[in-house]
Length: 468
Image (cartoon, rainbow, N blue to C red):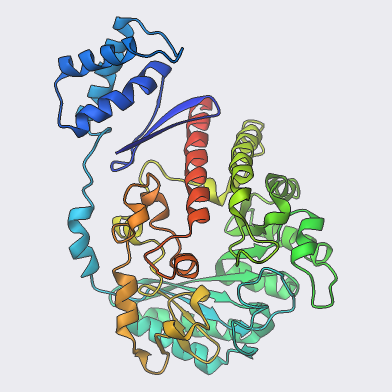
């Protein structure tokens, strides 16, 4: 299976199963569909392929390029060489192993600790209902958090590296418990031969010198929530009294990012129907000095006025193209930034398990509420049909775990013929559930945007490789 597209002047060809990516000339680009069709029919004979290509171009009446027979012959040879090298028209080697993949031993390697079901902001798009998660305001006690870490160690098998994300609401509203849990986690490392990687997501309101010092010492990554331009951020991320948060958090975030050497953090925003020109927000954050950026589409009930609608998609796709060109320009000028959705490793990429099943929600990754309940991930918290157990008894609903364990790109009908399936790994299970009623379904708008992001990311790789 191949996917070919044109972007920013580049003719790009992706071999989906091998992960190979090629930048080709116009002739090869236009010859490829004919050769692919013959390969799918089992025809590998050079002469018959060339004859079919020549016939196809003789019959073209669309006013396209005219190529000499020698050019077409060379294009066919180039394509066949790539096929021989298993860089085009390659076999899907993953599907035959899916049975073994489903039966793999399940270990828990990461927890999202909801240390605060409460928040000091009132973000209008908050899926957690300003931190309440369809329930009541609550703060996690140290004892519950301690049991959660014990559960993680006990459920992690032989895995050494474990991850814990302090999440909310706003986790800094429960700061002492965060510090105490980090200390407890560190005390478990040597006796259990484990290594904890702690992360934290914050809206920045409570950041100060003390919290910054601790975060820089103990947190491998910090996510800083800010939506971009002042008017954009303050419209969607106000305080409960209605006043904006931008002026308050920007200096704190700049200080923290600089103190971390502009690494191991993300300034993470959300764009909505109100700012479809979100490339301006990425540029704004970059101009503020942030070098690690992520601005992502809101996922919301279509009835909400800020929700992304199907009619917004064409404008968003154009904006992703515009953003990619802008980021290439900045890189060439020596002021490049990393944009999360455009970061693709074409030399290696993720392991097979991640290619097939993504984040591991419901199996390797779980969310823990302030009272110790276990859910597949933070976006399922509060939906009682996905309550998997608790930190005292462990996982009591193995049927839920097994549903998520069996969820992969081959169980999702819409993924089977999608060129981006090994990059998004089937997408978000929570989004699939919320929009299709099935974790094996899909969120159609999200899929459209993901495909464009993959195309832009690969185009950027081509452009920067050419520059180098």
